[in-house]
Length: 200
Image (cartoon, one colour):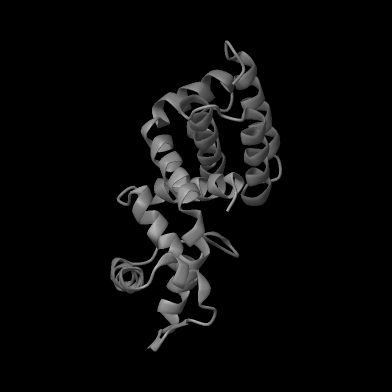
């Protein structure tokens, strides 16, 4: 996982959080592990039901308890030693394996999603200042989530690479947004960064 992937995960958690405010970023991340991704072919998917979540979280907990990250990363076919996994647990284990060596970037993504939520009011005010004709409450949830993450990272994370953040935000908009969203995001973020006393 690269920092770009961490930003995508943070965006997906932020987006899902707009629909599921009862879940924290950590809980939404656990759901993303089980679902493979918070999105499906038709867009961002709904989170699992509480019962499904509890069942799958128990499977993940058991696997993590008895097998190290290295072991989970190594096994290729859903079987660890003599333990035969259910299809659901195989899916959990595959995700645990995929993320086992990327814990720092996962933590970064979850922190970014949490900080984006905590600073949503501040970020929305910035959006409204730089886009008075298209304020935050009129934006799609995809666009709003991307901008909240990007502006939060620029303002509240140490030594942000603004060009990289803007580029990743534009690419997220191209992947998840409507046709012209990426132009709007690129223009707003560019204007905001240029307005800062010292470009970050």
